[in-house]
Length: 354
Image (cartoon, rainbow, N blue to C red; front, side):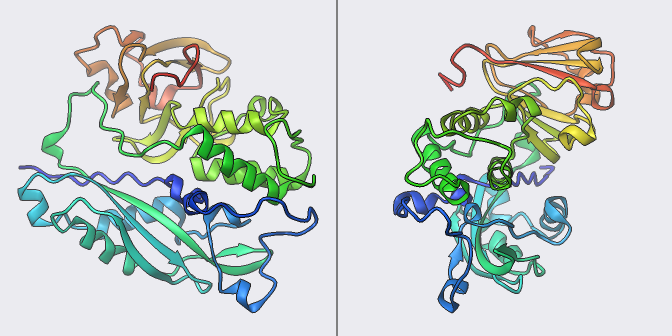
């Protein structure tokens, strides 16, 4: 059986402070106090969650380098391969103040030696750039999912792979937003859903950046200008968990972003994506690609109204034989390189019914 290891590296909800949800911290704090500042020796030994800090730890070379490191070093265990074991292993570890990887544990295993092998690779990682709070290096907990997949078990082109990451509930996400807002807002008291939001303040720019980083969501200027209350921010990031996903490499690899709103100019500067090599559109959504900026030129509509759509290679979209009414428009254009703007059409009540 021809094999291929498909690694899908994403930050789970755990990295946003899932453990804090089980034992939520006290939200009422003095407004002027910076909760991210390690003030004592005891504080410097604290293990921070990703959402608790101003600067998150970074693998040398960033996420693409980490993906390549794991791809080069991870081996598919023979027992798992022979028994057709596939799925996602989740490893949790702590990036220490000097960047070393410590406290490694298997959070979720799928058997067949997959968990043990993933743990071995993580333990052998080079030193990271450590996370910081108030300009000081601190210990930070990191959660890393690693997906094992056998190439021979691939589903048909337009059938989506199973969604193994459980989305955060609306209530859970609001608690995270409220906690994060308490750390950045200058208002006193417990944040409510109707607490005003003003993007002009530096702290609140940091707040949105942290949410973007943890949910891997790209905000447009229109998105940001539309936020008037904390409730709107919470609702947006909840919906963004179900938004269309765009990748710069084939097979859902490379740079990655989710969008809920239109992008009239889809380019490297505005979105951090220079091209679309593959994408996943959740059930109920539609995406229209245009060959010119401002929704002009040739177009291709990808309709996921009745089924989630996965296209693993945009440059070969013309060769997808079983279209089933999913692809409408110009299929002869190389959309991997020629997508200049995109429209996203969400159903009423989205993501209801997901």
